[in-house]
Image (cartoon, rainbow, N blue to C red; front, side, top):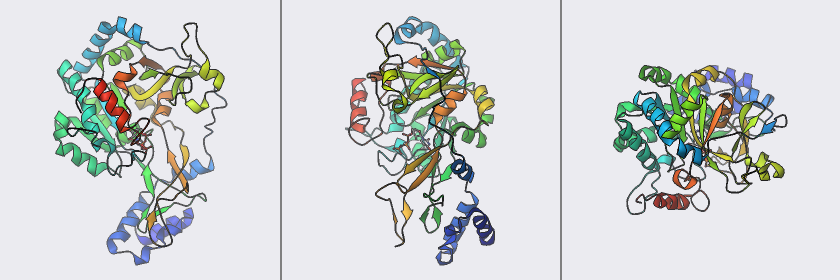
Length: 409
Ligand code: UTP
């Protein structure tokens, strides 16, 4: 894109301030800025004009039934057989969503490259691979792994995996793809300049993971391998069990389009999204959307009725994902502290929120699948999230869970 083309576009969009410093930039920076302007995704204009009503006021929420531990234990051998067979036939792939910025943990670079070890290095990516490699061994095949990154961490993620010999995988079974970026805007809808040669762009949330995977041409790879199920998971949880044969088997056996690993809430208002039904469709209700009455409701066994907290471990039927990929999923507009260029020419993060980011969420894709099986797991064995440096869901708490499972640190 030439300067003239960029100027014409930005005039039409009311965003000419992006070229404010153009004349003082080096040739290289000029090219960088023009490229960034050319690549801007303008769908935020529509999102600002017609924001999706996310209040959920029209929902008709009711509980969803799921598979509890006792039932899973009873049918474990049966489920495991189905799961192992599917994995052996190459029908299952893993997808790691690692495009986030990990701002709460506050590390530079990919969150998965964070070393949580005490006596020796243990990277989050490495910890997560332990279980997956165990499954590969059990089934005698490699479960292909697809890793979503973003412009902010792609190169570092790819080289980190290479440097660590793909944590025991072969290079051809690990594929990286980038998610889309979305511009951040101020309260007047103007795109924020992060530096003189770059608008503020950030990963557009984890909801677009399948569209990005498809755009990267990886669906052909999936089909060539005969994959039918995609197990997505977050980079946060070091006890994440991926391609767990029992879970895979139970999901296939139930005939649903999506299996969801869940933990049972320990208290009514625990801060997790909860699986439920909205009319005849599966849905996820956030903890702050549950009324006190709903949160405290119990069944005849004394269990909470809205019980199943999601842990971002979902098994999706590929054919369903392909069917729903073009459906618009809601864009969440979130106020954030966005690093920006100040009048003094310095880029800083403001003290308080200064604009809006646009994100889609993977949970919204879960709803679109139309049928979900909640599959209970033991919290202490499968849920050790790292969101923060200290305190709740932190490196410290995750280390305790890790050790509690008999693993070294
Ligand atoms: P979180 O919602 O915890 O976001 O992501 P985050 O960006 O990692 O962390 P904070 O909020 O900045 O502290 C849950 C999972 O979704 C991925 C993350 O990498 C993590 O595995 N994710 C999130 C993406 O892949 N892309 C995104 O745009 C956002």
